[in-house]
Image (cartoon, rainbow, N blue to C red; front, side, top):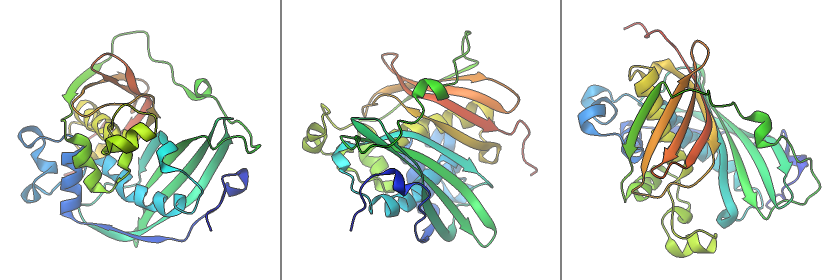
Length: 287
């Protein structure tokens, strides 16, 4: 029986589930987040690896999270992705077989909505590979009497009062959401116009995690010299929708050594991914 959303869920861990992927999976994901053969062939071609985008970690982690969320009373049409972070304990391999385990990290009552945090850890015989943390904003699910939790302002890192150190412009394609969903996020709100309207949106919009993938590619290019082993963590907040075919601009500001702040804007200048904290190695990994 599905569990109602309440603070009693906090700390609950779910049974481990099998996790695995092959070259094809990481190549398909790379296409789904905008990789182009002329500039990013290493992530698309098996004879060049393929290398694995660090943000690919959200795909198997989402499958682990889904195994937990499916046991909760949630209406998918009312579900929005609030925040997402990934911490890499070691570079992602192009082939993997292991397990993932999810636990509920927080539950907040926002009145008209509930926020549920899920932490998912992937591991194998060599130990932890990556840890993902996602918050789910569920409209209409609040009012159960829990604590409200921190406000967005409490956890926001201010944008420096200077031009960005890096500006990376990119373009999504009209079929971007249809392509990205083949990596595993089959929520119909991203492809079915009727379902999107039922959820209160004018039309299907791009997956937040697809925008996250664009942000990760920009960070990889600007901060890591294209080396995925140097991107250690990326987290941030989804603040508005991107629609397939929209242009996106990623602005990055250096903070302390090995840290940067990132935000993604749509073509009209609206911030769609904010509070993006990047941790990276400033030195290349040994060959």
